[in-house]
Image (cartoon, one colour):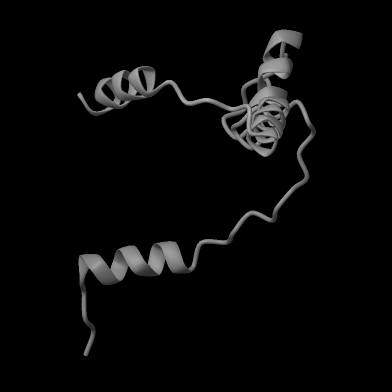
Amino acid sequence: MKVHSHALDAYTRTALTPINPARATTPSESVGGDAAAHVTVSAEARALAARSQGDGYDAHKVAALKAKVDEGSYAVNAQQLAVRLLDHFE
């Protein structure tokens, strides 16, 4: 008995097709065969990236505020604090 099926025929064609061996590519080749992209990062972009890699705060400002608190000379402006809190939650 012989079975003919389009699905079986398609499987047989793809399963028995030899696979091309892998080959090394040169740096100028890309997947689509186009020339490789070249990217240049400006000095300004590098400076911005360096600043953003910090912990998200100004360590010198924090140290200065900490020193004022330790000395007892740090005063909170309650009105300014209230305005900023209200602006934040609006």
